Image 1 (cartoon, one colour):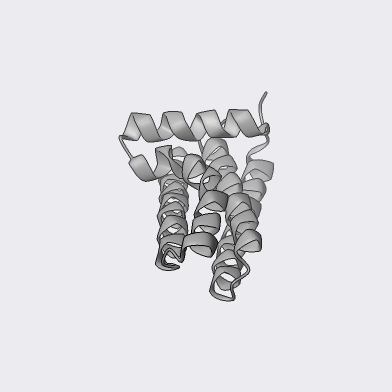
Image 2 (cartoon, rainbow, N blue to C red):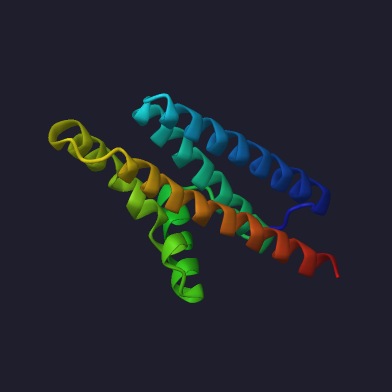
Length: 137
């Protein structure tokens, strides 16, 4: 399936804008102690960053499993643990919240986990930019 270049560019901008907004809001919610909301917002940011990256190389990703598989493969191909494990780390976030609540585990661990995922998202954005630049040449 082919996509019109203007429409593709509009979608890329839309995905990036929304992904950045969700990530920023997610960390704001985390700082305010609304951990579950923070998790959902970072999930949304990661999904949009993955869709943007896929679109930057010509793939239209829509199904959750398809998006996860794409990110795992991309991380493996690049030997990048942060990208490869980003969804797995978010899967473990609810358990980490529970550990913080029950055992008094330091709150820093929640920030570190989401910060790791945020770095993966930023790498996806950067790689998308590189892909788009290469395509325009």
